[in-house]
Structure formats: structure tokens, C-alpha cells
Image (cartoon, rainbow, N blue to C red; front, side, top):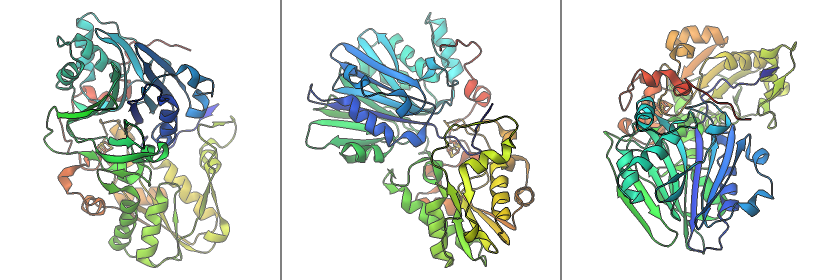
Length: 480
Ligand code: SF4
């Protein structure tokens, strides 16, 4: 049996934390709804932890939210404060000990943490924690943060957390609960997003990876948590402090290209609007005579709309996406490579036959899926295929929470654009230049991370970082 793998950058994780001033408030069901709005950020596992006085309740499991949670679970997930997580593993494989939230007992009681991002000095931190006598259960970098907090001499959670953050290098947006309080933390570079909202009509606050989660639980957007900021709230009062400035802001530009939902607003900029501007920019970079513009669904849709408007070429749905494929097993003996793509995308022949087709997609990682998509379009009768990609060529691995950590697997690291064009079998291939991407987002070059396109990493990456998501997996325990 073969497992479906998509050939595109893998989302990292989605996090949410919520606290109400009312002890009667049911945090878990609201966190669950919020996680639904974040499911696109991770489909490997899901979990919710709540705090009810001194008790900490948790439910975690592998799979989508709908697989992990049953209605009866919420009766035992009591508490007016809680956090949730959906995961795609970036450090540590997908086995059960790594599923978040991760909980621990510390000197002040119980604590739970959800983390989005990747700590690049995690091996060094792991060695430090082991030297101090800690026993580690998981191979995830997130557990190390809890150990480091409990090792702090400070007996005040905020001070202890602040002390630990000075030791972390890399990308982290974190929600953490301890002592009935919710803490939201964003790393000094702001690699991963984190927004703050206020619960409507009740005293309380919510922090989440994306603003869409606020919308679904009926919370008002307040602001983004800033790079290098800790926000603390008990549901009634809220405070904030800065802990360390980064050399520069480095929000991952892929949040706008692909990761975030089009209805999210990140750092004050609407993702939908950015993607439409990307489409317009692409159309200006290289004009083309074509009959129809089609997206590779879903993330290419908004960009293709922008392209179509700018180029004056009709927009059509040329590839129909089966929404229910998910992680699919393909029967041995089938033509697995083609079947993977056909299961998910079916060409609409009446749109494509005899047409000069512009196809818009967000990125090319290995190129294998793009090649099969082109084959589908050609088999449906397209006379020409012109591919437009709304990111620059991915030439370098990411160490900050995206699973593209092996350089040699990236087609653009070894091949020129012309070689990639030939490999894909398209008539023209147009990538978005970094400058045009920056213009589409509306942020200057030094406010975003573009390292996977130009190798200009916002902070130094070590040899350890190159080992990718199994970095801490020299020992491994399997829990079924
Ligand atoms: S290296 Fe690329 S994927 Fe990673 S954070 Fe930077 S822009 Fe995002």
C-alpha cells in the first residue's frame, strides 16, 4: 500500500489559546471550532488541553480533528482556559508522544504548550536538558521548552518563560497555559503569525495562528502579537512585554503565497488581496496569448483570478478537485504516480480541449506533481500550456518550520528555469521574482523571510539544522 504525499511545501502547525474571565465558560468547544479554521495548517494530529482550577484535561490523537474528537470528549475537557493544536510534524515524526499540546508538571502546577515553528538549536538544548537530568518523552523540540521552563530558578511563570526564550533560536509562535493564565509568544523575527482577539460579549481573549479562527468563534480581532512579544491574560486583565528584538522582522512569505487561508489577515494584510496582486504581477512579468486561465486548486485560485483580470483572459476551473482525498492509500499494481494526481484532480475537457492554457500554481518543490498536472492538461487536449508560479524558484531548504529541509530534493536547486520547463513539458514557465513578491505583499524586502529563494537566512543555521525534522530522533519509542 502506498501513501499519498503532496509535492508542495508542507504546512507547519496551527495553534490557538483561549481564556475567559467566567469560570463557567466552555473553552474546549470554542477551541475545537477555532482549530477547524486552522485544519489546513496540519492534518497529522490534533489536540486540546484545558485547565480547570488545578486540573489539566487533555485529549490528543493522530488524524484530522473529526477523527480525534467525539462529542462525548468535551464533557471531560472542562475549563475556562485552554489551548489547541493541529500538527504537521517539522521536528520529530508523527508518533503519538509528539502530538501536541504537550503537558508537564512543573514547580507551580500543571502547564501545557502548543508550538508552531522550528527551533534550530534544538539538539544543543536537548543535550543541555539531558545533562541536567531531565527525562524526555518525545522527539519534538516543543517538549524541551517545558523542561527549560521548569529548570529556571525564577518562581514566576512569566519570568521563567522569558528566561527560556533567550535560549531559543529559530521560529516559534507559542500558546501556553499555566495557573489559569494564557501566554502567547512570538519569536523575535516573527517567522510564524499569531493574532490576538477579544471574545465578543464576554470577558476573555483568544490567540491564534490566523484571524480566521477568531471569526469562527465570534471573537473580535484586536491586533497581531508582535515579533519578540509575550502577551499574558487571565481573561480579565491583559498585559504584554517584549523579550528580545530580532535583527529584523522575517515573517515567512509563504504564509501569503500558500500556507494561510485566503480569508486570513496576517500582520494587517489580507491574504486574499495579496494573492490577487500576485496574479496581476505575474501577468505583467510575461505577457502571453492564451484562451483560458486555470488555477491549480485550491491555493492557485485567487492568484489565477488576479492574472485573468490583468491579462484579460477568461478564468475557468480546468481542474476539478476531489475534496475528500486527504491521506489516501492506493492499491498496489495501479499506476501509482498518475493515480495520485488523478484521484485529486480531474481535468475538465470542455474547458481545455484545443485551448492555449495558462495554469497558475503557488510553488514547485520537486516538480513531480507539476509534471503530472501538465500531463493531465495536455491529455485533455490543450494545445499550449503556459505555467505561472507565484513564488520564486525554491533553491534552499527551510529550517523554520516548513518541511523542505533537504536541498537536493528541490528541483530548482539543481536545475535552471529552462531545464525545469523542459522537465515539466510546458511551453513557457514563469516564476515570480522576489521583488515582485515583495511588492504584491506590500512589505519591504527586509520585513519578510525569503531564505528558501535566496539562501539569505535571517539567523544563522547550524549543521544540526540541516538534519531536518528527525533531528532529535536518534532514539525513538513507539506508542500505539
Ligand atoms: S525559508 Fe522559506 S518557507 Fe522557510 S520561513 Fe523562510 S520563506 Fe518561509
